[in-house]
Every structure is written in C-alpha cells, then in structure tokens.
Figure 1 (cartoon, rainbow, N blue to C red):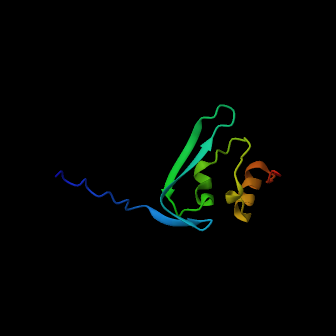
Figure 2: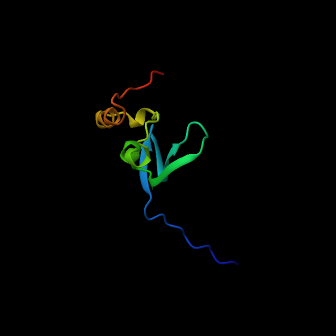
Figure 3: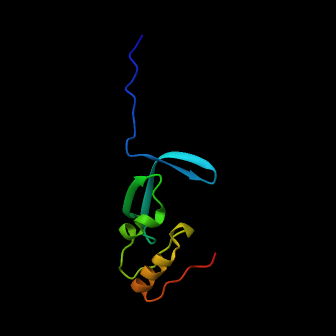
Length: 93
C-alpha cells in the first residue's frame, strides 16, 4: 500500500455563508480594464472578507468610470466616489 498524501490545511482560509450556503476558502477581488479586458489589480482574501473592504485597493483614481455590483454600495463608498468624481451615482439596472 502507498503512503497517504500529506493533508493540506488552509490556515488563512475562513468560512462564509452566502444565500444559506456555507463556503470555506478564499475570495478573489479584481479590477478590470473595460476597454481591453485586462486585469488591472487583484486582491486575494479569505472568504469572509466583504467586497467593500478591498475597494480602495482595487480602484484607480484616474477619472475612469467605476463599476461594481451592489456589494460595493455603501454610504462610505458613495462619499469616496463623490470625492473622486465630484458626483457619486449608481447606475440603474
């Protein structure tokens, strides 16, 4: 009989529950160039980190439009967007 492979333990991974389903692991957060589709910035966190917590690490303050899903919508981020663009707005669906 062969040896068992070593057990892998993700020491930094965390649990998160979304829509009643539990997940264990990591989450990728990305910023993509709209015109060319290139990934401009990325951050890897444990699964329990909310998307809005890494917003400042992903956004480029270069006058471009900023798109994000509803996870990024908060009063603090609206204030930040207002400072960047002098007018924060949320695109209607």
